[in-house]
Amino acid sequence: MVISTAIGPGITGILIDWGIDFPAQSLVMGLWCIGLSVFCHIVQRRLARELLQPMPLAS
Image (cartoon, rainbow, N blue to C red):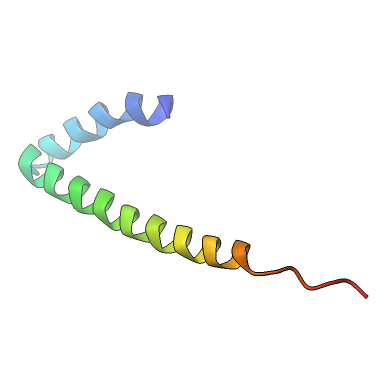
């Protein structure tokens, strides 16, 4: 987490130098966060469903 917060401003600056304005970057980052949230929600529901199933007895 420390690495991502340290690298983030540098990457943002490089993208601005390449002509990608900050509002466009923010839109993409926001969509990325929404997509990951949806993915994590799907995984969480699947794990909860699998963990609530009874374990088969070993023979």
